[in-house]
Amino acid sequence: MFSSSRPWPAGSGGSGGRGGRWRVDEGIGQLAATPIMRWLRSLGGAVEQFNQTMVVQAPVGVTDTDVVVVLQALLDRHAMLRARVDDDGAGAGC
Image 1: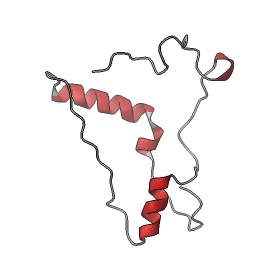
Image 2 (image 1 turned 30 degrees about the horizontal axis):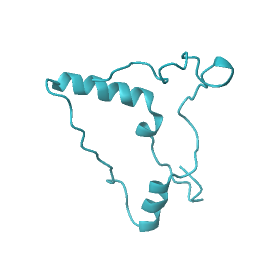
Image 3 (image 1 turned 90 degrees about the horizontal axis):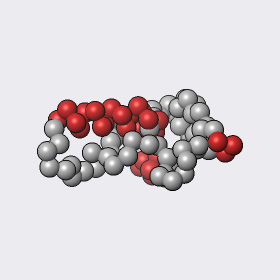
Image 4 (image 1 turned 120 degrees about the horizontal axis):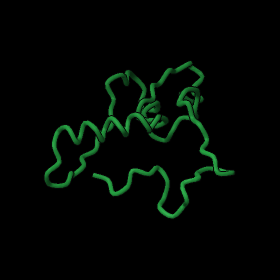
């Protein structure tokens, strides 16, 4: 489904980051609220069932298994897609 399996742009040499090293992000910790998080907070009330969706048109011939493999790879590599909000009441982030 993708033309490249590399997580860096073609021609970059693949060294990534400064000094030729990739910055390791464990995906754990606090972060500043994103614009959608701030908007959601501004609505007030319960947000436990809130979700964002997107429709993607897949190439002809893609199977259910292909979709599951790609989605799992995306989840494995994209920490924000696994993010949870743990509101400490301070309203500074998540």
